[in-house]
Amino acid sequence: MNRFCRHCATPYTQDSGVDGFCCAGCRQVYSLIQSEGLGDYYRKQDRSAQPLKDRALADVNLEVFRRVQTEVEEWGAPTQAVFKVEGMSCMGCVWLIERFASNQPGLLEVRTSLTARTVRLCWLRAEFELPNFVAEISRFGYRIDTEPFRVQGEPRLSPLALRLILCAVFTGNALLLVSYAHYMGESSLLNLLSLTCLIFTLLLGAAPFVLSVYRAAQIRRWHSDWIPVLAIMACLALFGYSLIFASMDLRVGAFLVSLLICILLIARLAVSC
Image (tube, rainbow, N blue to C red; front, side):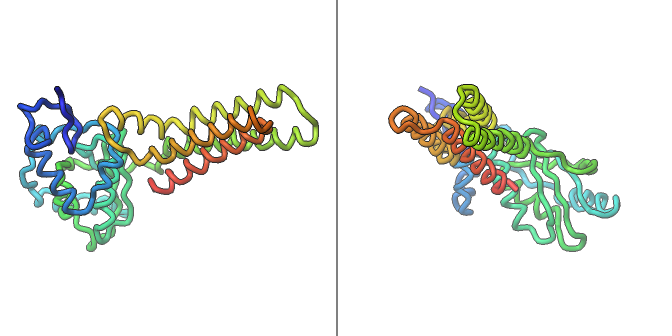
């Protein structure tokens, strides 16, 4: 019977594993994460990662990154660059890399993209040391590419922010429908429109939380997104109960559920910034 690695969540057989891990590299990094007090990584992990046995944990040539930093600083102000990151596979990795970056002196901004597998760094000259940052994350199995990219233009709107904007639009429409019905009276069309706004808000706003929980369940992980998912489910259950047994106004209920989803998205966006 297959087991799941305690670090990367990759399935392995009892004969091929090492004390609950798929390889010795994963065991080493797991112990390092726990000793550094970074156990929250596993509560944010929502999919299996690449086993450490496929990535060497040998020391990195830091002199190369000193030259890279000098080269980037010659590009002019502001001092910033985008680096490819090998080994980044889930939101836990994003959290871990940004956690390390926040402890680096002289680093003004860090933006990590899971989709592009990149990290964008902006730093103060003479205060930030790129080799120190590279050495820190290399201990956990991540590898920074030695060929950085220039930052092109302004950062685009994140997918999460776009979801929030669209959900806010549908929530605002639900509120307008409540107000309209208050002055114009009951209408089955207004109820249908309110329900439509709620459905679109659920599809757009609840999807990130539900998908994270679903992927985490597949690798037998407890994910922090269970909290917002349970909140949404409880709110929907209360909404349905109130409609059936308490004669609650459908439009008001649809607005309140949509508002809750917007609040959860705002919280998620605030945490990810």
